[in-house]
Length: 405
Image: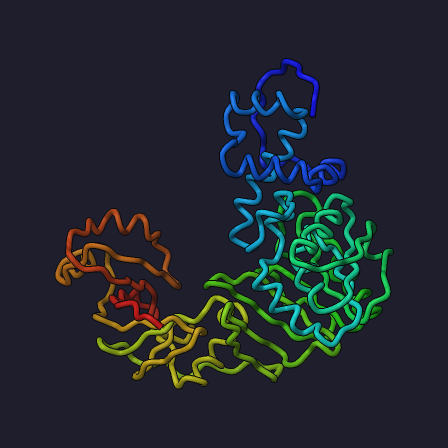
């Protein structure tokens, strides 16, 4: 495949840019075979191994293939078919995983034509392509080529277009858009600093009406200049993204959804549900930690009222109840004991309970868990969860048992 030549060994960075020419080569059966060999028995992970591969391939091809192997391994956390997909590092980091993407794509079932703007490597594109005819637009030719390839890996066909999404506006019944949160390199949560920014997003919403806008879960959602449903989505306990639904997609004002199960809690009012009055902590009661999406969506009050729970404090998102609740919206624990917190007192208290391993959870508490663990010097036989928080302004330690759902 290449003429032999001598070259010095070069280590490969996994964040190197992927050119359109490299993508075109990586899509070929020969390149796919190279990636498969590197993935299994012939990695390019040492200078000697790189030299052996360079006896058969150009140096740029060796680098491109090994880079894809590394990215595919990382991509398995998001995509079940990652071993056949194409990525770049930033594109993979920003892509919706296939579970989140499939959840969002469900609202597009009645759309004949969908435009996926700022499509990146196609994390959302491949899910949308299972529901509708999709045109995917991105400024990067490499990523458009990757999106086309990745959709095909999942059995879909899309039309890819390279261009500025503010200018390249394909005909569509609805859009999905993932604004670039790194237009100047560093990742930003503020939608005002994204590309397109809020003002530009408003123009797109006015043009298409029916839109799903993917934002960081840390974005200031009070800045939205248009009427929309705000959905916070978590997957396996981590709040992954905020989705802004406009036009016909809007169903409620605020929603928190927990995947993979899809259970959700909603508010149809502009004023979010108030928290119930706090309840006193006592050994034996059930303590519930709301899912990250519930907390970020400010729907702790709605969850508390649904399950007849009460917070430990007016400012702390831990909930208490007298009965067992089975829901993915909350993680259940049972309280073993409660005490006022001081580092020395809590160390003795944990020893009294014969605790040798402890998971520390903090809310409204300044101390760092790793520092406390060193101070506690645990040597007991039992395992527990230690909640460190504040109740009525006082630091409190709660020893609890994690319960299986």
